[in-house]
Image 1 (spheres, rainbow, N blue to C red):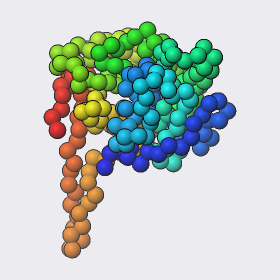
Image 2 (image 1 turned 120 degrees about the vertical axis):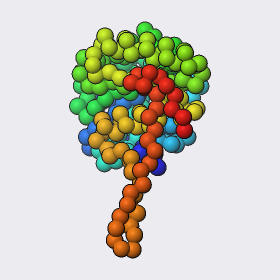
Image 3 (image 1 turned 60 degrees about the horizontal axis):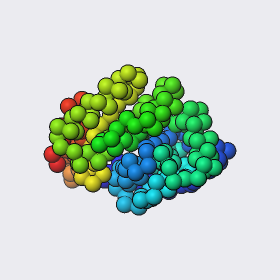
Image 4 (image 1 turned 135 degrees about the horizontal axis):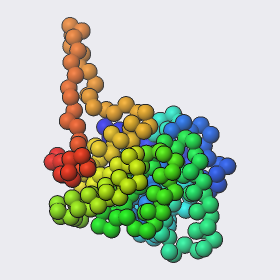
Length: 235
């Protein structure tokens, strides 16, 4: 069973004063409008409609909380680059986003979704600039990787990794495809570590009549990462 399959919608937050008080550990998801952010959350949770996927940029206007376990949450942030949103709404989002990213103690890391075909936009760099000074980890998902050739995947991955290396050692990146469900295993490993959740690398023990037990190892999904040179794992 996917590690985050128990994720369920918890609440929507429009003002900092309404942030959940029981939160111990949060992972926030940010990304440019139409970067595939909501699809990535749905893929990780193995749920087609957990986070709303819209063709309208800026559909997510607040912080949407999804409960994973007691005190542990995914947080879906408003998509940035929302050209169709009124100025008043854009100002409200920025007034909510910036202080949340900089000062929220329960926030343990940021997942930044970039379209692998067009990474490191000006707004992506602005988001990195907002969050990097906190010293908390950043993991970049290069989404829609299935739309690139192997050579293009490797180039995109290398380009982003070089940019992240200039920002700091606490930044990592990988290729990801919600359509092909590629890169899920590696993303799970990173997020479970941030959240303090046990990765489900083993099947439940088999108990024999004699009382002897045995465990069946599950095949781990390596995913696509900078460590593996952008190779696609075959499932």
